[in-house]
Length: 71
Image (cartoon, rainbow, N blue to C red; front, side, top):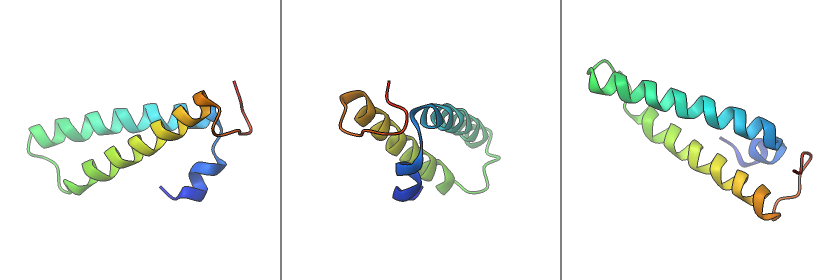
């Protein structure tokens, strides 16, 4: 995910995307266990994106990142 895209997201968007990515990661792990996964690199990319989203979410919580949707 591009840095500019992360900067444009609101807190609600981040939480939605984070839950979607965690669900997709779980599905990819099931596919890997069943040996049906065609591209194992997708797991690494998804984990990286989840980490980026969690970082931005933490920045909102700490007040470092003031955004469109502060709670």
